Length: 599
Image 1 (cartoon, rainbow, N blue to C red):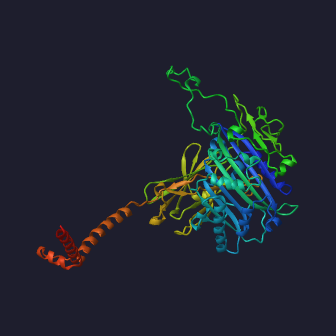
Image 2: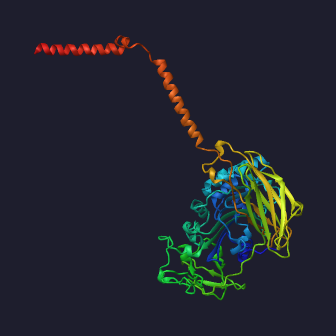
Image 3: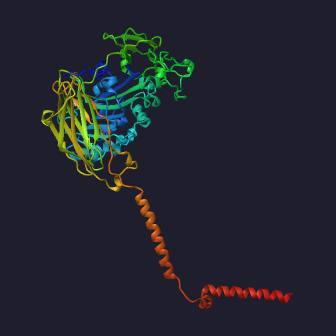
């Protein structure tokens, strides 16, 4: 089975970057493609490489020194890190860019191949890697401990050319609850040679980037050994965002949407309730125009002078729109149209700023979008605080070909699945559901059970979904009770469960162009039995009150002396206080007596 990508141009650019890496030290590109529902996909790609000899000797020019030193210290041979927010709407936007290979789970996802003699040493270096990357990217990667670390078996494969003598260990970790923000974008830009001050990276603004409907940042480091020439160490950074055109065009000083004045509304006069104070607005038949300055809040500030592709004549910015549609660009920019009828690229000038304007069209024709070959959905079912269930739905839209894929799921240790309850149901296009043996759907299974407070559950399934059918997998699980100190401050919100990873298989387990196709489900929120956190406060207050009352009463009984009322005056005179008081009275009487004699 051969799967096409969402953007064929992205695959071509990635392949060209791989084959020309030996001749080019740094390259950057941007692909813009309008999407349905007034959206725009912008794919930024930055690739830098250095020779393996220079990397080993710590001679860094284009490769970021901060990241290179971390990789050398932890013996990391290949690294992949993802920062993702939002949800990709595959029904409207088609397949993921880059075949999903550069997109990750919601939050932060990290996996790496580490060279180590044994598993214990590999895990120690993995912890050092996560803590170092946590400081580099200003993220909470240091919270990836043994309970959030797994060792996938078949879900991930190395993308680089590794020496066969290396004892590589694959480790994978996720933080589905991590919030991606500008604190992660700033160190991401600092890894670039031009630091986001020039070139395509100058368009990346945190206000626009994190206001997008969907956003993903990735960093991939891998060794490359071409057939001719020396081996290279390559870093590939990408930023993929889906912008809402109307929302992005709002001015930064006044971002709050305002209602359209009544005299500017286009009303449907055919409605029976149409009147002077009643209007049913009509949707505009034309698609909104846009420009780089309106979408990103700035124009492209020239090109990065370190980009070798600009000096060699390669195209840096491409658009996926029909050739018949008019586009206005900055004067002096060379435009090249590709034979596919939808792709046009622009050759930028070295110092001049660049802007592209897509005027408003009455009937805009979009470039064709590739439909995903599989859709997946995962939800938590059941009720109660003790048990629940997981339901995974796979939909194969093809009428002729079955879909084979790897399903990789990581569960926290406090969610205990019962694999003996795993059941499968197939629903055809006629809507009739029937139960089938699990062996008809699940071809192979790898299961590593969880250990309380040490590691989570790892489940990898080799599945096959027949053509024109929907397969539903269900299994039951039990919820563990945590200790009082293990609950987070927002315990009533629920606990995050990492999304599942789906790796689609093609010919010989690969997709066209030797690039696997990856998909991910959405993350889940698992409610757990939560104690009444106000009870300790109530107990402390009640206990303190009782102790204060008891202590005060007992202390009074121990230190006070109880006597009769007629003995109190005599006893008081014998005490130190009584004697001092008597001396003061005598002294006062003496002074008063002298004063009376003088008179």
